[in-house]
Image 1 (tube, each protein chain N blue to C red):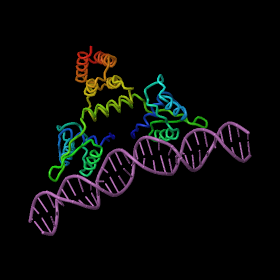
Image 2: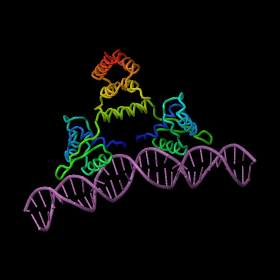
Image 3: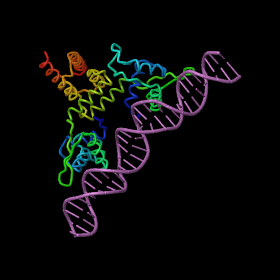
Image 4: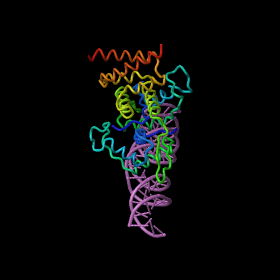
Length: 138
Length: 138
DNA sequence: CACCAGTGATTACAAGTGTAATCTATAGCT
DNA sequence: AGCTATAGATTACACTTGTAATCACTGGTG
């Protein structure tokens, strides 16, 4: 399976948020998340505007890469992701951790900790993950 | 600061392991880590062979990108990284976590846990990080 | 001192990317 | 039924990346 580029990933992301979706819906979603940075929408998503031609191109490439499928709905297409978000993000994470931290996850977390990038919530989420893990592996 | 590509990163990696280093030393290091996969060396590093011309090109690009510096030692150059490994890997990690997990680290760890990609060592490393964090933040 | 081996610099080149514009077919309006 | 707006397909184009080959300079060897 060919690689998915950053821009392609953002399109996929919009699709994962709601599918099946027409090209226009996808474009709308991409531009809605952080239009002129109207806070209150979703993420910080730096107010980038997507040109429709650009998104169409990316959709095409995703289809070629078999990351997105479509079904002809009358005249238009309805697109759907062919990858599961979770599987994909896990694969990418593992790849990065493999390349940068010899496959160990702790050094990554340690980096965050050292930079003060962890807050109470992150810590409790991690603790809860750990206790789950310990429940299942002992 | 321009982006560093994957291949460039591997060259930087070799540099970080030992610097200042001549081009030849870097090439040697790259090919040594996992030559014909003689286990016992270092990582699994899938036995890729680096062509010296290729490495020279990458070094040049890294210099242009100000990721690597050099000093003229008689006839040859001695290269050194201009980025700290830790800072760089942290930046990359944060960028990925931002893009894929809305900046939260726990979902990433959760993915690993779900896939059974955590072992006892990872867990104790994480626990130790957490207790350190709690020591410093309460 | 002339020549050569080797080093860094320059050039090459196809594939992938970001970003779009143009082409083409067609569904729906008048 | 003919025309137009539009959606998807095709084409464009500069920049990056992986992977090298060729060029040009220079210090050391014979």
